Figure 1 (tube, rainbow, N blue to C red):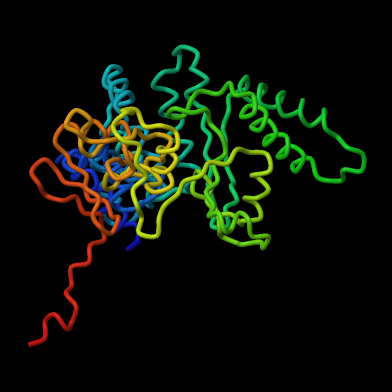
Figure 2 (figure 1 turned 90 degrees about the horizontal axis):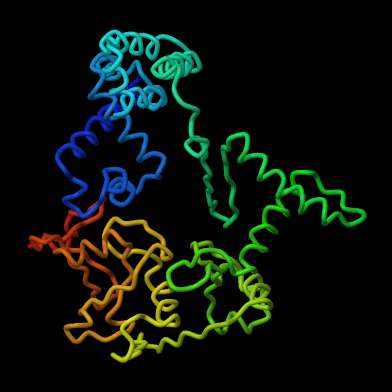
Length: 377
C-alpha cells in the first residue's frame, strides 16, 4: 500500500512538472524525454508516469482511491488511455457521464482483479466508437528490443494479421532455403537464424535508408593492439549501439568488413580537417561517434545515428571542421543550441549544457554535500 501511495505521488508530481513546463525549461520536448534523461528511467516507465499523472488529474475518484494506496501502478497504467485527448473528446461528444465512469473505474481498480479492470477499460473504449472505421493496422504494431548486460538482445513485437503474415512468409523462406542435413536445432533457433539472415541480406544489399551520411552497417570500435593481438580480449570492443564484445568477436567481424583508422595521440591531440570542408567527412563523424556516443545535450539519450555534427564555433564565425570544434546533437537539440542554449566541452572531456539565461542544466542525482575536510577549521 505504501508503494502504491508513493507511485501515485510521483505520477502526480510528474504531471505538475509537465503543466509548469519543466521539460521545456531544460530544453527537452516532452516530460517523458525529461524523465529518461534526468531521472534515468526507461522509456516505458517514463510513458507510464506521464500518462498516469494525466489520468489522476482527469479522474478525481481514481485519484482519491490511488492516494489511499488502494490502486496499484499497473492499474493506473491500464486506466490511462481513458483520459487520452481523443477518448475524452469522444466521450464529451457522446454525452458520456465521465464522473460515473470515473467512480466505476475507481471501484474496480481498488477492489477487483487486474484482469477484470483491463476488461472493463477495453469494453468502455470499444463502446466509445462501436461503428467506427476499420482501424489502421499500423496503429497496433509495436516492436521493442532490450539489450542485456552480456550484450544479448531479447524483444517483443505485436503485428496485425497482414503484417504478421508478411513477416512469417519472409522468415519461412529463409528457413526452408537453408536446412542442412543433421540440423537438430529447434524451430525457434532456426527462425532466429533466419531473422538475423534477413537483416544481413538487407544490410549487404545497400538499399536501406541512409543513417546520417552513410549506409547503415555494423560498427565495431576496437583498439589496434586488441585487434592484432590473438588473445580473446573480453570486453575490448564496442558495437555501434553500445554493446561490449570481445576482441576475438571483433576480429571475426573484421574478416568481412572495412577497417577505418582513427588516430588519437597520448594527450588526446585533435583530429583536424581544417576549414576546407564545412560538411564533416565520414572519418571525422566516426571519430565523433567514438568519442561522444550520442547527443551530448544534458539529459538527452538520442543515439549517434540520430545526431547531426554541430560546430561549437560556427563555420561562418571562423570555426573549423575538427574534432575539437565539433559535437553530436540530435535534431531537436541542434535547433535548441542555435536558439539560445549552449554546449561546452571542458578540459576533462565532460560536456556541459547551459540554458539561455546562463544557468547550467544539471542531471539528477546531484552531490551537494561537501567533503568533511573542507568544513574543518
